[in-house]
Each structure stands twice: as C-alpha cells, then as structure tokens.
Amino acid sequence: MAGLQSQLQGMRSFVRRDLGRLPWGMAVSFVAACTVSYLVYVMNPGFTAAIMDSILGMFMDAGVVNESGGFSFIGLLLNNWMAMLFCVLYGFIPFLYLPVLVLLSNAVVLGLLGAFYTISGIPFSVFLAALLPHGIFEIPALILAAAMGAALCRNIFRILFRKHNAVPMVEFLIGLLQTMLLLIFPLILCAAAVETFITPMVVNLFL
Image 1 (cartoon, rainbow, N blue to C red):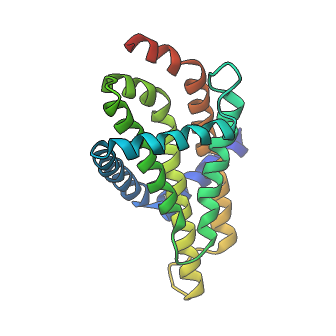
Image 2: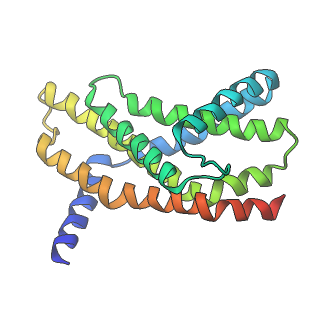
C-alpha cells in the first residue's frame, strides 16, 4: 500500500509540475479541431462518404471488430494502448511536437464521424450515444497522452538548450511511466470495456 501511495504521489507531482496547463490547451485544440472538421465534412458529403469507407476498412484491419461484427474488447484495448503509447513516444522527436498532430488527427476523425451521421440522416443523439459512454474515458486519455508527449518534447528541447527549468530525463521518464500505468491505462481499460459491452446497448435505446 505504501508503495502504491508513493507511485500515486509521483504521478500527481508529474502532472502538476511537468504537464501544468498543457492538458487544458490540448482539450481546447481537440474541441476546435472536431468542430472545424465536422463543418468541413458536412459541406462535402461525397468526399465524406469516400473517406468513411477508408476509415471503416482501417477499423477492420486493426482487429477492433470481431467476426460477428461487434467490438472486440482485447482488440480495442490493445489498439488504444498502442495509440496512446505511440502518441507519447513521438515526443522523443524534438522540435516537431508530433503528439499534437496525433491528437488533432483523432479530432478530425471524430468530426468526420459526426458529419457522416448528419449526412446519413441519423439523429445526432445516436452519434452521442455511440460516443459518450466510452468517450468520457478514452478522450481524456488521448488528451493526457498528447500532453505527455508534448511535455516530453518540450523537456528534451530544454535539455538540449540547457534551460534552467529542464527536468532531469530519468526523473521525467519515471513520472511519465507512472502516469501511463496509473492513469492512462485504467482509462483505456474502462473505455474498451464500456465500448464493447455498454455502448451497443445505449445505442440501441436511441434507434
């Protein structure tokens, strides 16, 4: 118990010190990108339908849909974990802030899905029912992962240029790993469980 409390304290310290306001900035950027993407795709229905075919093919190839057409819990969990992990690891590439691009690309896809529902004449309540139950876990996890990747990229920049506010890399990576295991993983575990077992039932209520 004492060990877990120490790990949680390390995670909280990392979030306060090294992430700061980054998650809030990421959240605002995510919402803005979703909104702009939705509006653009709604105004281009033919293009939206073509892109949706590609997205559905990617879902099938990723193994998140099982043979019966439902979501695979293990497939969703592994796919989301790898997505979060790579979002953070992209932060090792200095100067480019690739985790931000990962976040925005996911926001664009979400806007695309919303636009597809609108163009198809499906009530927006169905879209929200399909998104919100698991999205309340998955979207914060994605925002946090992008913030962590951006913070990693920023800290490497500070180290390279010998900035006074740079955090020693080992200390930073320990905090990052603690946050991945104690915060990000539980969020995507809940998201995968909800999307597999609860979201389909919620959607059926609105159909």
